[in-house]
Amino acid sequence: MKITDIKTFIVPAYVSDSDWAFGKAFVLVKVETDESLYGWGEAYVPNDCEHAIAALIQSLSRYLQGTDPLKISEFRHNAVHSFANLQTGLHFSCAVAGIETALWDLNGKVHDQPVYKLLGGACRTTVPTYANCHSNKVFPFEEFIEYAKHQHKAGFTSVKVYPFWNGTSVADGLKNLARLRESLDPGCAILVDAWRALDYESAKPTLDDLEALGICWLEDPVPTEDIESLARLTEATSIDIVTGEILSEDAEFAVLLNHHAANILNPDITCVGLSAVTSIAASAQTTSCKVAVHNFNSMGPALAAGLHAGAAIQNLAGVEYFSRFKAATDTFCQLHWQQVEEGWFALTEASGLGISVDESALTGFDYKPATKRPWPS
Ligand SMILES: [Mg+2]
Image (cartoon, rainbow, N blue to C red):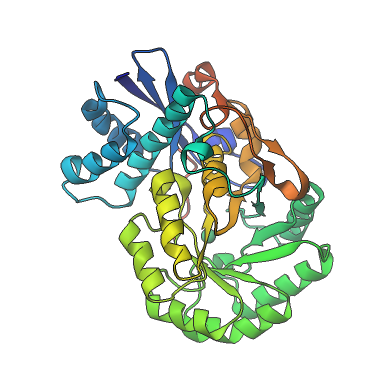
């Protein structure tokens, strides 16, 4: 079997635009072969970079045509060493991960197996997810409380919120968080993402307040490159410190582990790819660290890839689920995974990623760029 073509499809941001939040563009990848089998993948898209990521995938595609699509490790090695000459970085990593995801889907279809079985088999029968409640529109916090309650009503038992988002002070953020805790069913856990808005001096005193509110997950309290502060905060609290969503290199995750700078590593599934997420998890396990699968992508190929990785990782802390992308994703992709109690997903037996993509829906989108985000003046 040989690769004959690699196609990219941009889902413009307006497709996922809603009253709740501005939309986000998605880039889907289709790897075609000379044996009528094909695989679907998705690449992470940094803001406004959908054309850049798609162009990188097309540049890589030239080198893949005529090669064996089942040689995923060889593809990753050649992409990094021969194509990029070790000059990689986040955007390159997203493009490689997009192709790699499609190769895993294809690999699963060739062997008539779900991808998690090719990754070493499942460690669990259901894959835990949590509901992200982020919006990039400005609302009073009551709206976030209602949104979180709605996610819990829809079945999720963990919700993630951003109390310090958009310049909200630590004091106001903690007050809002206390209101959320009072309003939400006690059985629903609150995960806090600080969006790198704090520094050590402001984060350290909040740990006791967060602990008192029963918070057990604090994501990105400080910038990820501030390894020393992350390590000091990790040492100082029983709350799990979570970080890594903006990282793309194995070596960067290794630095976090070597410095005990997190309890949970948070690689994005279509920024680093399935192979790297599983290898990062194996390294993390050697220091009793867990992995949560970050997934700010469509709820189609990327979610499916996250669920397969999540199934195969022993030390999993959960997979991120964006309810606000569900309706948009349904217009071009069907997910053959069943959501059961707690919003978790029962293992699929479908081959590959367990998705069906409607290519005609993808080609039917007229492109428009995302709404321009305001810059501070
Ligand atoms: Mg985050």
